Length: 446
Ligand SMILES: CO[C@H](O)c1c[n+]2c([nH]1)[C@H](O)[C@@H](O)[C@H](O)[C@H]2CO
Image 1: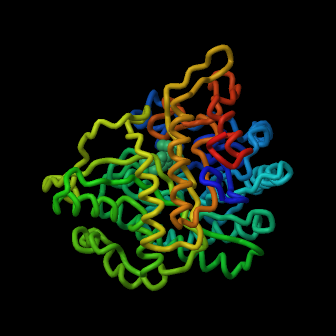
Image 2: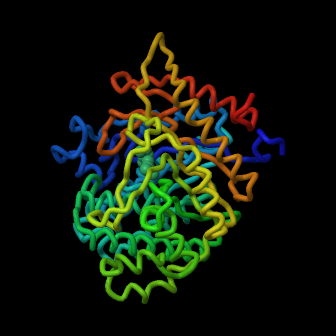
Image 3: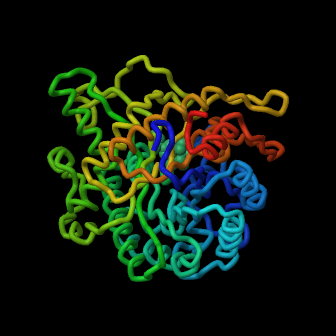
């Protein structure tokens, strides 16, 4: 492999999520989700934006798949909206919801694009939230039943399955910071959500094995920020390590691969873990086929006894994206190398990497040079990771389309394709054209 070319058959893709692009949240029998409720609650999202229309992908999926084909994508990562399938989370099945995803999957296969399905990307059926949601231990069964039904209906055509998208964000941004659905601010609820997501994940992996899906693979997608110590002092090093164990892949991969929470979590915050959590660890320790790594940015951590987990983020003057996140490609390498060294997964996929910039349309074009530079710098680090032993098999740019950026609404654009929300017109940005060349050449240098 030349120093600038990715391995043969490297899986180049782009990613989206149901609530962020589909629109039509209650159409054709779909049930309400916690994000439908949260975004319709005044004050929760920028400008009061909701996912009611989004990119209207529910109706425009064929046009969007044609765009994917034009870009030359090998794979497409998307999520299934649980409440489209089970409007109340369990029990009654909504065949029209199943039908939408049947049509989507069949259209992808027709375009020779490999589907990567995320079973849960935060749009929990609202009816289950009324029963406690991720803080109710029974959700592990409700989720596994939903996942198993998806395996039975789609397992003949979908071979790559991701159980959960970023369980840390669901648990802490949704249950501690209150900035995401369901909008709670309860640290005990957060750790209960961590634990029940792990239980749901591992029960689902076991069920996946029993379904014996031919050539099927299952994994989990985890959020990561590269935390560097502000100074070469033991306090800052410890604070950065603890931030890593709490907010990055170790919080979930340590239980999955090693059968317990990370050492620092047990030493510093075990009081917040559910009572008798140890009884579930054996069951949670269940082999997976790949790890999905989401990476966007890094930060500098300084010891601070007044902060949660004894560390706070400090400035280091790096350039930032529209989200205010540092542009730190070196951190991408550190996270990829770290996960391989700490857990040695059989396969790793980058399931999200991308950036928001202030994109403008000029004569029906979008010249987003900053995004091209961001993607190039991060692909360089991904290739470096492969050359240093990381079993990286694919990369999904976040995102295919500009979309509903959660509490930021439509104010932040991550797409390699621009969406005019007034007309729903799509415009392939320069970054989309550039990425199309990367895929064609299997290299970021051409
Ligand atoms: C620190 O960034 C997180 O890992 C993260 C960033 N992102 C995500 N997680 C989510 O998985 C996507 O739904 C977001 O649209 C996307 C862009 O914000």
